[in-house]
Amino acid sequence: MPFRVFNLAEAAEYLSMQEKALEELARRGEIPCLRQGGHLHFRHHDIDEWASDRVLHLDDQRLEAFHRRSGSARREVSADEPIMPSLVRPEWIAPALACRTKASVLDEMATLADSTELVGDRKELLDSLTEREKLCSTALSGGLALLHPRVHEPYMFFDSFIVVGKTIAQIPFGSPDRSTTDIFFLVCCQDDRIHLHVLARLCMMCHRTSLLMEMRETDDPKELHRILLASETELLASQPSAGTPRR
Image (cartoon, rainbow, N blue to C red):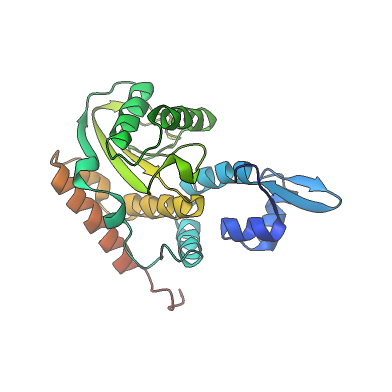
């Protein structure tokens, strides 16, 4: 699938966007695309990278809109239903990583992911994480990073999951506001469109609830897991249901 080429309609559906909006982005040169015979074409690999970075940096209103659209586009996920219970377990949370560099964080998080026994090849995962960080850091303001591989292929993982790490020391990780990072989510999804929805969900949880502050107050994996699920519950309760228009 990474070598697949989408037409305008297919790319818009994949990105949960209106065709006119996508066409305008292409006209302004804000999304990678090809023009052939007067038609727009989009390489799957290029727009997946673009979309992942875009989700991490959407403003609050656009993030919420994308989260709702991406949730309604896939049967496996919903904008109104919790997804964290099926993706993360207490034993997949490392509360006291002794990392001091970006490279060591990536290595430890790849090892943590491998411990789930859902990773096909640890080295391939680590290489893909490293390549993704070279393109653009996944660190965000607030001291968190949403790590994910550069390429999302079904064969990389036996199932979708998230592992969570918290470092003892603050790490310079390339945050846009130049702040340091201590909380790391590694998102490993078999389907890249589900991956984008999960990224949006985590961004909203981190920025709309007290998740990060509460995570910094404990090193108990079971308590961290409880906090994570409670944050998602709080977020969903604050959102209008799919059938309720926003005023």
